[in-house]
Structure formats: C-alpha cells, structure tokens
Length: 362
Image (cartoon, rainbow, N blue to C red; front, side, top):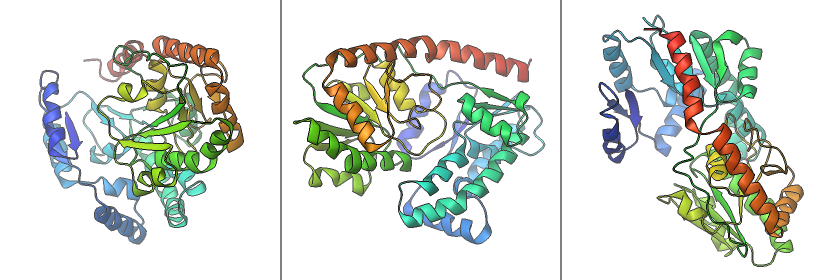
C-alpha cells in the first residue's frame, strides 16, 4: 500500500494496516495557501490541470517505481489524481476508483456560489481537468463510479461502457447507530469537512439565504455547524447571529448528532455520493437536502428525506419537520432501514471482490 499523508499523526494511524498489507509506505502531501497559489499560477501559465499538478509529488513517483519491481497482479488507483503515478505500460491490469466525476464539481463551482475570482479560475480549470480525467478513464482497464449517473456521464464522453461499473459508497451501520431523537429539540445540524469548498458554499448559502426564513417561522431554532477546518467566513457566522454555533472538529460525529432535530445538506456543488448523508441515514436522522446533495442515493422525497431546491422550499421543509414529530421519526427510521439494506459495506464489498477477481484471476 502506497499512500499520502498530511502530517505525522496520520503516519501513526497507518499502523493498524500492518497486518493487512505486505508493506505500507507513504509520501508527504503538503498543502498550504502558498503552495496552492504556486500551482494555480503554474496551471495558468502552462495549461496543466491545477487539481492534477497540485498532487504531483516526486516521492510518490519513486515509491510506485519501486512497487513495480514486485510484479503486482493489479494496480488499484484510489482517486483520479493517483493515476498519474501509474506507468503508461503497466505490467498488470489497472483499476481506477473514481469517487466523483471530478470535472463536474469544478464545473459547478464555476456556475454557483463562490467569489468571482474563484468562479473564473474554476471556469478555466474544469475543461483541462475534464480532458485529463477522460484520458485517465480510457487508460484504465476498469473504472469504478459511485453512481449510475456518474457512469452515464463517463460513457457519454467516450469511456467504453464495458469498462465502467457503478458501485456505491457504503457506511458502517455497526459503528453508526440510530440516535435517540428528542421531540423538544430545535437544533438544525450540518456536518462535513469545512475545508472542502462545496461544503463551505452550502453552509454559507443556508446561513444567509435559508436560515433567516426558518427563524422567522420557528422561534428558538438553532443552527449547529460541525466539521474540521472551518474557514474564517464560517467562523464569523456566530458573530452575526448568536443562534448559530460552529464547533470545528469533533472526535465522534454521533455525539454532535445527539441533540439534533433535523440534518440539512443544502449542497449546490458536487458529484458522486455524499458520505455524510449515508452517515446521517445510518444514525436515523431526519434529512432535508437538495437534489445535488442526495445525488446517487436512492432516497425518495417524503419517504427517506425531504428534497427541496429554492431557499423558500428548503426553509419550508425544515420548518415542517421541526413542527411534525411523527414525520421526523418516520423519515429517520426509513433512512436507517435504507442504510442497512442498501448501503452497508458487506454486499458492496462482495461486488468489489468480483470486479477484482475478474481483473486479476490469479
């Protein structure tokens, strides 16, 4: 196993893999505003994709070259950026695990939400990333997408249909257990990594365009934002509105969910599947989301969640749930059942085993 780490604490976390892998090695993945600015400028000057060149590290190239000497039966490239380390004439089958159609995320960033300069940069980036991504998918012997929708996009753009399989992301339904819902709670919960631009856009969109409409209809409501590395504009939200709480990182998201009445995913930008929705489903939380938020998940409106688009519609759905205890219990239970029956790991990994066996029968 060859992987990137972002700090010494992550190196220590690799210890539990020692019994599963013949060897585990890693390369550092430095990230900073200065480095991002350097790679952004390089992308503009040389025409390379920023997303790909940013994650290009000589140490990983060296590790992969050494790994090739072990005559592998299969190369499993986890995330698009990792395929740049696979030799063009690899001595074995190559599987690319596409967690998203990456260019679609950047394309949506160019169209929604962000600052003008960021939208402009995204508009220049996504065509370059699209060209690189499609070439990478055509190179691979098999591509895994997480949704049928993403599979269709890749096939429509020239990736052979027989070399793309949709396989959803799963959730550990043993670890994530249903939380006891509280009838009197008025807390609206959002969680996710707050350094990820689509999550930042979603929280700001909710706080500025949706939450005030809810407060006007539901006295005493609160908005709780949970997730690591919130940027300054998120951290400042409680100063403008004391009913908003920004916690930052928490050790176990289940603790943060204990007092939640509604879980919201007001995403406008994304691709693939949202793991946080699967986690919320496994915890039996009542969910309000957009169509982008629940993309690739088989939930139906008013069966496992409420699905809304405009600020007025989204605010109305949240207010409806806050005032309807029976609906909260019903949606939470239905979401948990779907997590158990459709998105738990064992049946998903059984399908992955078949893919690997077909690629590398030995």
